[in-house]
Amino acid sequence: EHQPLGEQLKQLLRNDQWLILVGVCVTGTIGYVIRGSVAVYYAKYYLGGDAELVSAFLSTGVAAAILSMVASTWITKIFCKINLFRYTQLVVGALSVAIYFLVGRTDVALAFVLYFLLSFVVDLHAPVFWSIISETIDYGQVKNGKRVSGFAYGGISVGQKAGMGIAGLMVGTLLTYFQYVPNQAQSDFSLMGIALMLSIIPGFFHTVMGMLMFKYRINDRYYGEVKDEMRVKGYLAN
Image (cartoon, rainbow, N blue to C red):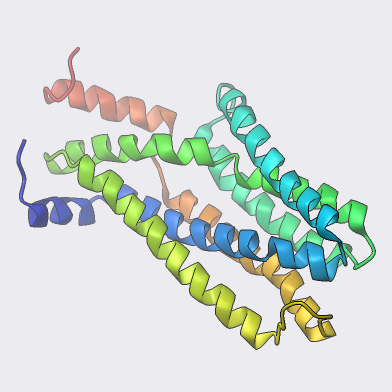
């Protein structure tokens, strides 16, 4: 069904659950990009690692993320996917605080363990996020009588790009504020800043992300009600 762009935007702005996902996308992307951008600095300067250690540290995060995607598929078969989304991001906040306060500059093994756990937990939500966008589209159709699909996915993508842009600006600004100077020994203030940028600062954004998801109400039971209403209204075949 052809709909003018302005009408599609109007319908999306009336879809409160879709708007929550946009906010979740922006805040989560900010946290993810800040942590990912500074991980190499953390391994090199804070942990004092050589090229081999830096490579191993980054690979640990990648391996944890891959395993997380597989685990998420299994976990959501027995556990509410929305609750998984909510609470994993709060756990990320707690793990971020733990990394900052528990990992000293010589605690390389502990840094690897906690970074693996953080990278694993933070990505458990990813398959859930991309799957529930379609549920907000169905919800919006039931609520407003109009179906907006392409622009709904496109809008989420715009939110993701906005988060990346904000995070990029924050990374540069924070590194400047903490007086980071490349390719030389860093001051204690710079090292503290690098540690904060790997842990508490992105952890804050993931915590906000998790809190926003408590406003999201389309769980499996509620989505079943949405589909029933779609059938009643003729939007979905019986």
